[in-house]
Image (cartoon, rainbow, N blue to C red; front, top):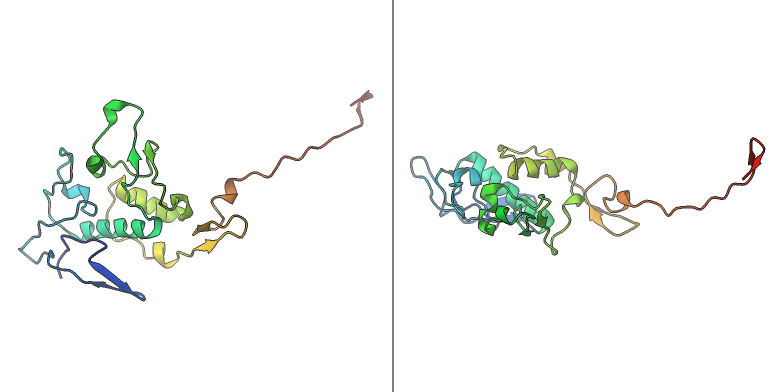
Length: 194
């Protein structure tokens, strides 16, 4: 099979540890490129950056397949894709249409994006995986991701707060400071009673 023009989470069936491509009518072969795409999964690097919605001007390649994979992986783990949420910049001149966000690399990691409420907080993922996502979606890095990103992914539930996460320590509890203790000291310093 060549590269998949319409590679998305509805075209892949996962059973046990095996993945099957179940819809390949948009695959490209040799000299027959595919012009099909789903805007959620198309690599913005092969789209016209001057448009307000993804319009493909390049061709699919291994890198575009890996981009679509990264989108599917993020959606599977966090219940949101890289361009979920609502972009609300403080400067009204910076407002862009929602469909243009991939073309401008405005992801859920942007401080001006209101993170979607139904999504799992991205801080539940290990730094290496978050780095892969920001490198892919904000810095345009492409290529085959290290298998260790998913192979070593282990989720656990915090016994203190109940948060399910894949970090070495709970991302919720690590930021919690213990309650302040009031200490009273009595005595004297250089003959002065305190």
